[in-house]
Length: 233
View: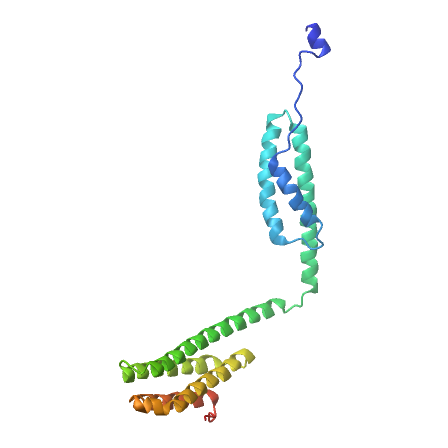
């Protein structure tokens, strides 16, 4: 060993440990969740996934030995913070289960079923509105194969009204679904009022003979839907 080696002149200085960028990205996100009284479980799962990636980077540095001590320190710090988060989330979940009523799951399922039924009824109601608009459009245009087109439109409206009544309104005592019945009756009544107000115009264009029988069919369908006589002008 030479004098230079003894005095340390021949040795290369060890560069400071450079913390991986992924660690700098991960730490503040963990810190944000740590400040929450009720850490978000979805966020925790994402953090866990990203932390695994960081562990892999740090383990590779540890394997190279030069900065093993520093990398181990960083890795252990992240693991401790993630473990604390996991414990806090577990405690919150257990507390939530204790506070939750026994029939919570059943109520949740009931809610989802009601929501699905309401959505199906609303979808059918929207189809009815489109069909009624088509009927009125045919009346306004007053041309083309009116009789066949109006007959077809009327048949489809009656079919939709019947499906709405038989599959939903008659079956479910639900405020929203029963509200669709009232809205449907109003729309049919409005269509009838429009046809009454334009009766003279239809007669002049030879359309009244096509409109009148189909309007009667729709009013009959509306009476069945309401379960009573429909109030018409």
